[in-house]
Length: 224
Image 1 (tube, rainbow, N blue to C red):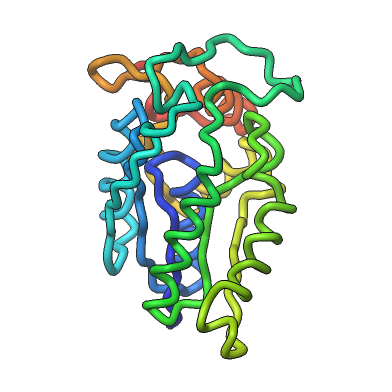
Image 2: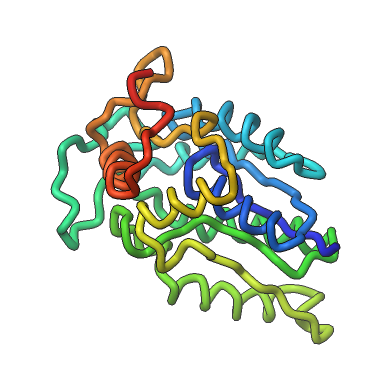
């Protein structure tokens, strides 16, 4: 059984991507980043998801990107609500270079584990238009990993798996149901209330609701 590092946010997508890795026979090492996000409820969800997946080890790492600002997820700026999703505009919830930072940290851990595989739950169909969720980005990072590591210089390779890249949110929900996942453990909202309840109006809430509706499956978080 080979080791794999999985980036685990506590959201629906990262949970599903990690479960796919487990189903493919990988031993999971989960990495959750506390990056100064306002929706820290997702870190609690990541712990629950990691326990459900039975990961070998779960590291929660503090890398406070709120020191830079530049995103409504790491500042007090309002999170956009009821935004049309059929636009090319990159929303204020984009966190500059977040996935680049996350993958670099996952790569560092993977190299110490002699793990050639990293899993990330990015998606380029039903998403908010973030540039670091595109297949071109994932492919470019894979090339960088070969150049930037002792493993790569020694002839080894790293594979960055993005198994949800070409799936709709409904497809992801169906995949999770087939894998027996408990989506009641997850958290998706960008702007939950003080009790952790989802707002129902941010991009992430809207995409999640549409995915469950289109899949014909009830969201276990609905009404909470």
